[in-house]
Image (cartoon, rainbow, N blue to C red; front, side):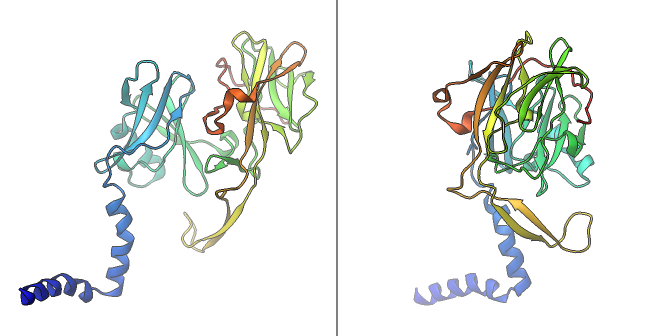
Length: 304
């Protein structure tokens, strides 16, 4: 019996011993891809859709992961989108193979009419938009993209926010942020009606969260006290489209760092009266989404 055990031990260890160093390195690098998909139905944290009636999450499935959308009222579940159709459309714009069960993003958001989704990919957080009926994907130019956030909790203030003027439902006024304050003025860069008096870099109004009420009488948005912008320096050995390595700085918040503190604020359009929302209504900071107001046409971009 002892001889049989020794022989079995030799049979199991000899192939490993015979491997070359490159073989062992390749095997080690492959472990993550071999093991990370072994779980089933492990869900990531859910994210609310803009309509406030649905939420979606990503879960592990055989061979990868899938996105699920849930009706909060009925608890009915459905695929968030057709991953098999989306993958080749995304592959065409990325110029590389994309598998339906290995889509290269963890988070996404629907457009207000749920006809498309937006998500970011890569170290530089390139933003993509993909339609969901007969999918077509495209890169969103940086000036139209949302300001990136480190792990979703700290805004990268090195990147300008999307501050295009948001038109009122009747198209007569527009709202944007200037010098950290909310400004309401006549459409197309016209005469200023009023601006908030209390915005500052340490407690600013976020233009990307501006939302008009359907009747055009109020504006809601978030006021932000920025968190700690911890930067980590990395060397990209093979940056896309370049031959030489590249040194980059990445926003990289760590456990214990202060994160962005967001507070919803409501303004009356007629005179700029501000109403602060009771913060006790939003005890969970990570459950607070941006306001969702009436869909409005995009104003022409001002040079201001």
